[in-house]
Image (cartoon, rainbow, N blue to C red; front, side):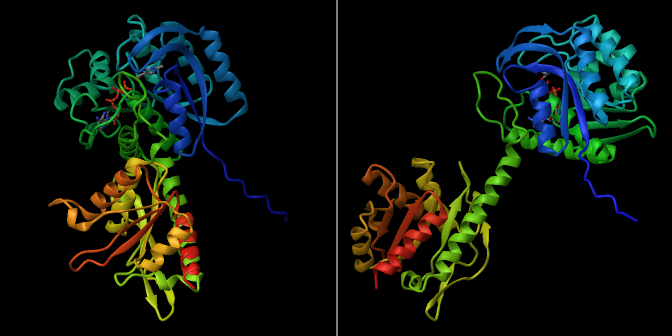
Amino acid sequence: MTEKPLTVKIPIVMTIAGSDSGGGAGIAADLKTFAALGVHGTCAITSITAQNTTGVLEAFDLTPAAVASQIEAVCADMDVKWAKTGMLASSEIVREVAKDVRKHGLSLVIDPVMAAEAGGDLLRKEAISVLIEELLPFCKVITPNASEAGVLAGIEVKTPKDAKIAARKIAGLGVETVIVTGGHLDATDLLYEAVSDTFTRIPGTFVKGGTHGSGCTYSAAMTAFLACGKSMEVAARESKKFVVEAILKSLPAGRGVNPVNPLGATLEKKERYLVLRNLKDAVLLIEESPDFSKLIPEVGCNIGMAIPGAKSYEEVAAVEGRIVKYRIRAVPVGCVEFGASKHVSSIILSALRQNPEIRAAINVKYSEKVLAACREMKLGISSFDRAEEPENASTMDWGTAEAIKKYGSVPKVIYDRGGTGKEPMIRLLGTNAIEVAKLAVELAEKLQ
Ligand SMILES: Nc1ncnc2c1ncn2[C@@H]1O[C@H](COP(=O)(O)OP(=O)(O)OP(=O)(O)O)[C@@H](O)[C@H]1O
Ligand SMILES: Cc1ncc(CO)c(N)n1
C-alpha cells in the first residue's frame, strides 16, 4: 500500500470588515492577529475608512455585490470554516453577509462594531435592526462591548450586573454564546453560554497602553482559537491574554489613541531567540579561546546582550552563575538565560539609553597591561571613579552613564580602578555579544 504524504493543514479564517487607513483596527488588526496566531487569514472588505488615531474622517462603503464577490472568491477556493464580522456599515451589506454566511456554512463570530473608539459611526442606525433580525440568528459567538451590548439588548449597560442581563437578552435573539467585553467596564469579560445557561467571568485588570483596535483584535483572536479547535472558555481566556499583550506592546503612532500591536509579543519572542543564539555563540568563542582565562577577574566574568529597546534586567540575557576560571580555561557555570545578571544588565541598560544600538557588554580583568592593549587596539576608552559615586546610586548604572558623558558617546571600553573592597574592572561594549566576545578574545591574545 502506498502511503499518502502527511500534509499539515493550516486553518483558514476570514474577516468580513472595514479597512482602517491608520492600520490600527478593522482588517489590519484582524489579519495581524491571524498571522500571530498561526492561522491563514483571508478578508472581504466592506468599507474603506479614511481613519487615523484621532477618528474616522470619511467612509466609502463597498457595494453588497463587491462584498459578496470577495467572499465567493475565497470560499470557492479555500476551506474556510470560521469567519468574523467587524464593520458592516449598512443594512444592505448586513443582509448580503447574512446570505453569504448561510450559503457557505460559515461558523461566525460577530463583533458588532458600531463606532470607532476615537469617534465616528461605523454602522448606520437603521442597520442595527437588520443586524439583530437577519445576522444574529446565524452566529455562534457575539463580542459586544458594554455600549454595543446595551444597544442590542435595549438596556443601559454600566455595571457587570447589567452585562449579565444584557448577555441573556442578546442570547434570546438567537446567539449561542455572548461575550460582553469589559474594556469600558472593569476589564473583566463576561462569557455567557445559552445552551447551559452559564456565566463565566474572564477576569482582567486594566493595563496601560493603546486600545485602538482592541475589540477587533479580541474577536479575531476568538475566531482563530475556535478555528484551531479550542473550547469556548479556553478561546475566551486565551483571547483575553492575547489582547492584553497587544495593548501592552502598543507603540506611539499618532496624536490620538495608539493602535494595539498584535504582533508585538511574537516579535519580542523572535528577538529573545536571536539574543540567546548570539550569546551562546559568543560564550563558545570565549570557551574555545586558549587565552581568554587570563582576562577573568577574581569575581568572575559575564557577558550579556539585550533585546532591542530593553528597559529591565529581565530583557537582558547573560550566563547564569558567570564565567569562571577553571585551571587554564574559561568555563560558563550555567546556561545563557534572561535575567541572569543584574550587574552586566545595568551596564547594558545604561549604555543603550544613550545609544540603542549598543546592546552587549562583557566585564574583564583590570590591569595596566590590559588597558595598554586596549589603547594599542585603538579602542575608544573612558572611565569613572567610584569615589565620586553619589549616595544611593546603582554603581554600574551611574558609572556607565558617567563614563559615556565624559567621552561624549558610548566608548568601546569603560574602566574603573576599584574602591574599598571593590575589584577594579574593564568593560567592553558593542552592538552584540559575538562582537564583544571577539574583541575580548583579541585582547586576550594581545597579552601574550
Ligand atoms: N485597558 C485595558 N486593559 C485590559 N484589558 C482591556 C483594556 N481595554 C480593553 N481590554 C480588553 O480588550 C478586549 C476588547 O474589549 P473592548 O471592550 O475594549 O472592545 P471594544 O470597545 O469593542 O474595542 P474597540 O476599541 O476596538 O472598539 C476585551 O477582552 C477587554 O477586556
Ligand atoms: C474599520 C474599523 N473597524 C472597526 C473599528 C473599531 O475599532 C474601527 N475603528 N475601524
